[in-house]
Image (cartoon, rainbow, N blue to C red; front, side, top):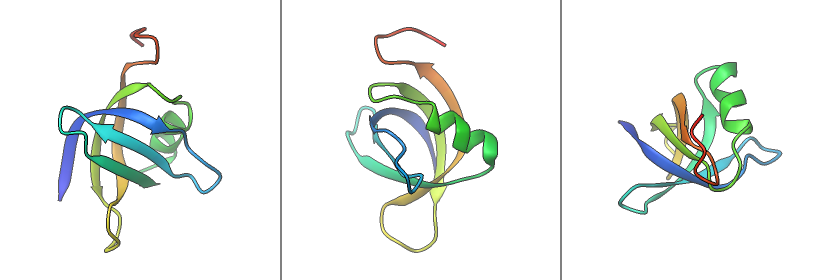
Length: 83
């Protein structure tokens, strides 16, 4: 299962490389815990709370509500500044 959508960062990447995002407009929450490659991990690590990104997510294993960022494109950062 893969989802491509617009998400808002609600929790920055922590020491365990987990970032929490909320989908638009459904307000569903996703915990991103895995990354397709180092570039995707670094892009997510650079995001601050409030940043809006377009991501393609796929399930990370069998655990509930943990996802892998397959692709990451910054749409709007906090404050509404396009990147």
